Image (tube, rainbow, N blue to C red; front, side, top):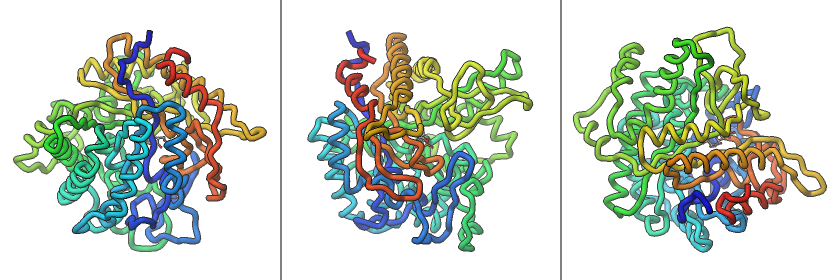
Amino acid sequence: MSVFSENFLWGGAIAANQCEGAWKEGGKGLTIQDFVKGGSADEPRMFTPVIDETLYYPSHEAVDFYHRYREDIALCAEMGFSCLRLSISWARIFPNGDDETPNQEGLDFYGRVFDECRKYNMEPLVTLSHFDMPWGIATKYGGFLDRRTIDLFVRYAETVIRCFGDRVRYWLTFNEINFGVLQMGAFNSLGLIEKRMLKGADPVPKTELKAPLGKRIQALHHQFLASAMTVRKAHEIDPDLKVGCMLSHITQYPLTCDPEDMLETQRKDRILNKFAGDVMVRGAYPTYIRRLFEEEGICLKMQPEDVSVLQQGTVDFYAFSYYMTNCSTVRTDVERVNGNLMGGAKNPYLQTSEWGWQIDPVGLRYTLNQLWDRYEIPLMVVENGLGAIDRIENGQIHDSYRIDYFRRHIQALKEAVSDGVEVMGFTSWSPIDSVSAGTGEMRKRYGFVYVDRDDNGTGSFQRIKKDSFAWYKRCIETDGEVL
Ligand code: BGP
């Protein structure tokens, strides 16, 4: 008998800027991602303050989901998905971010996408903001550092929730909101771009788009408020709608049992993983964060009403991405590895992916248990998967490595459910190959479905089922019994 509940959500997750393309169609405005070129694990993506249309920018065409959504949703339906996580591009609805009225063509597009999902009884799970702030908000307002951006976001959120609330029951506010505490999150997550970066026309490495911690925390505070206000709005519109937070959970292990390593692990875990979750699930700033603010000289500007806004806007469920774990240590003479959003000390017990991310299925069980113990609200794994190079042999892709990755992670998920953790669902990252968020590459593939597109922007966009397609179909069909 299956360990999963009857209405467990099985599916996959994609994001607008990584799959849609059609960057100037349907009245869409520009987003911050439209200015970023492709890179690789060793070569940072370049940001160009002015778009040079002779160059290749991965988001401009991505994998053409905008024109091929029917085919892609049908493929997901064929695998038996009961859920498709996807994001709305804010700039398709409010092209400049602060327009007087929403763009009807954008609303119509998503209406068609959600109808298509419903046709197959697939529950859409919608991320309102997945790393693609409208360019107008980043440049005119300075992203989330400006309090006015809160209202712009809430207006956008209210518009789409009112419009699609009948077809979309599950919502996520910001993708990987905890990214904002990291330097890399300044641009992607918070939309912070220093004025001087916009002056010349010269490309700058995306890694140079930085902001001091104080500014990032202030902007993150505004995102917390925007998220809390959205939760309240959604419940006003329809009390049955469920709104979740979404974090990238980068579980930290101590590299050794040296008490100093234990403390370092706790410190990192709190800032990176717990802080944002605590605010959004518990509705208040945790006490441990005060000391960090003091030590870093951070003086958060709050309005008197902020405390109650956070309190009244706690989320209904906790969603997170899980790809890997890292080790923390105070020692500096240790081997290090790459990772999603950040690297860490190498764990001698784990293998790494081709991009250096440590593969840790058991860590998923550990993480789910930790989160359940802390919050006791429903959890959902909304991203998990293996970025790998796939090779076509006689028109087929034998991705046994990906099957192995999922088999072990879903096994761990089942163990966690048997441990008593309440898990609502599991959506793999990118069931259809899409552009990598970190490197902008196409060759870093996650899909059950291969897309003919390369890192130079050539390819027919043809979709080809990989071996993992039939495997995942069988997994869903048997409710995770046959892995
Ligand atoms: C998460 C993002 C996704 C996705 C995934 C894989 O951080 O939410 O957008 O892309 O990571 O990362 P990457 O694409 O860099 O391999």
